Amino acid sequence: MNDPGRSGPAIDLSTDLCGIPLAGPVLNGSGTFDALAARKAFGDELLNDFPFAGFVSKTITVEPRAGNPPHRLWETPSGMINSIGLPNPGLSAFCERDLGPLTELGVPLIVSVMADSAPGFAELVEAVGGRDGVSGIELNVSCPNVHSGLIVGEQPDEITALLESLRGLTDLPLIVKLTPNVANPELIAAAAEAAGADAVSLINTIKATAIDPDSNRSWLGAGGGGLSGPAVRPVALAQVRAVSAAVSIPVVGMGGVTDGSSALEFILAGARVVAVGTENFRDPRAGQVVRDGLEEALHRRGFSSLAEAQASTLS
Ligand code: RRO
Image (cartoon, rainbow, N blue to C red; front, side, top):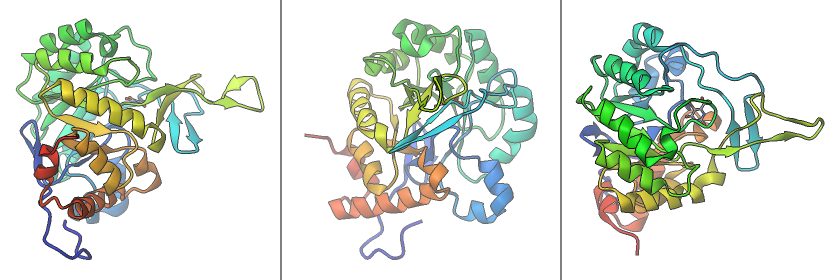
């Protein structure tokens, strides 16, 4: 919705992400906004102005997971560390209970999945890809809080093998969520593109820890976690810029997006769309704030549409 308080012509924010039509370029980061809880709290009011132009689910696994022991969160001066540990109901319960309501949010639904083996990923992709109302699948190969046998997100060869095993299982767009915890994420992105990925999203959280000063222990139950929020934005921008330059598939940029100006930074770094994550914990309407602020920022810069900014290159 265009900001009625701003003078000047409306800015066209519509776009698409590998064929998924979007009314605007602001998604949520997986696991940072519980749309079903919000719908319970706010009812259909939520759907009249849903904060995001597309919704990415919390990552699901084949089996249910309880998640990590407490503490799971640590606030930093400019962000937070999470050690959530991928709690989720598992594939069957997700499909039976959550998937239907998630397809009724009024925006395209992208389901995030993760497994500790290629056959596990295949089971998830086949099950989710066969369901009506799913517009895309995000392959989470980058959670810092789960010890899996797969180091797929850190190795180009492993990404190639995984994508090649999954590509034939669905016609839906496959979006690979990249880890920032490697020296050259553009090599992982290029391998994903070559093996058939339709888009990449980055960054997931940066490995971090917090020490309890009153004991000789980590504050976090699992010992470590992932840092997110404004503190990671410069790292995210550098990685989004490097990855965008290395691939032709679209990039979903995230990492400390809090307002229109920071969203525009990601678009100018080469992201096609952005995602809001940590800021949703502070303000559940952050998606609208970012969208309206981006419209304002585009206007201020003299862009007449989002597409113009997407097409402009950094000098
Ligand atoms: O659930 C988590 O602990 C988690 C996940 Br799946 C992820 O992808 N990134 C993150 O920071 N936390």
